[in-house]
Image (cartoon, rainbow, N blue to C red):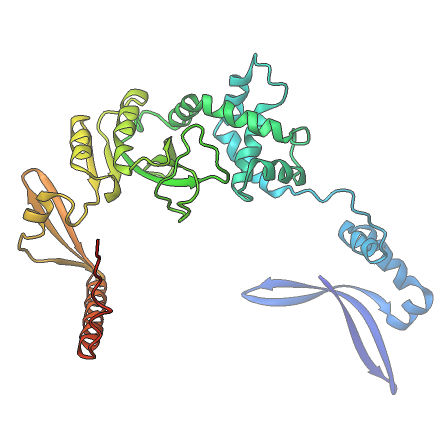
Length: 373
């Protein structure tokens, strides 16, 4: 619905009328209908009736009153806190029944603050504004959320320790939440590790120097391992010293899965960083099946029987060819990327050409390194 000025010419004079018109969809086309006529525009302006009509319409529209007040600088900002993150993630928090769980775990304690609210603040800050607890304690003061106004930095520190001591109970709660008659337990899980580093140099606890995924080998770090369900929801997480090799993290995870979760048959999926002959044996002895990435020449069986086995590749798509190889009861799937293979061939050829050119020019000294003791 909108206003339209209709111009008419009569007796060598021009007249303008103000009409209210609406658009309607009829028979697949837009039709316009005259709702009413307010009269001649010059008469409405002279009598002041047009102003009265407009003021009456504005009075029925709060949005226009706000815009007018803003233009007249009659609005004052009392608070500019954010609502969005809390409205979204607190709903998910409640659907996971974490509010109920944390209030139950905190019942009877003497923490002196709302630990469930602080736990929500910790998680919430890691999602849109990841950073330290100090930064989080400042960031939540910009949010409009019930119970956040009384939280301070010491509460963040105490809550982090409180949550870690109840980690098993929380993980068990999340695991049991979606179980039903048709979802008895785990059938497929993914396991991987990463590292996280710290600022500072305190040699306490498990923080150690080690291979850093963040390329910060000069910082103390921890190894974090996560087991994920097929739907992407974490099942459990573990923390180890920062200098522990990936292959040594798998056995503790297998033991934890068997003790803490009622699982019958489960397929464990992990990358080649977890693979060793000892780990594969441990997976079989635990009664699990597995899908793992293999190092091309990491195991004797792969080098001697899998890679040397003849057979035709099947093209899955333009950059993926596969070949199946059975060794006893073990099934291997050999994958080839022909595009990457061609690039590697060209890179090797370029290196050889560069070396040949350098040898031809007599630049042997730059190619040979001699160590004298």
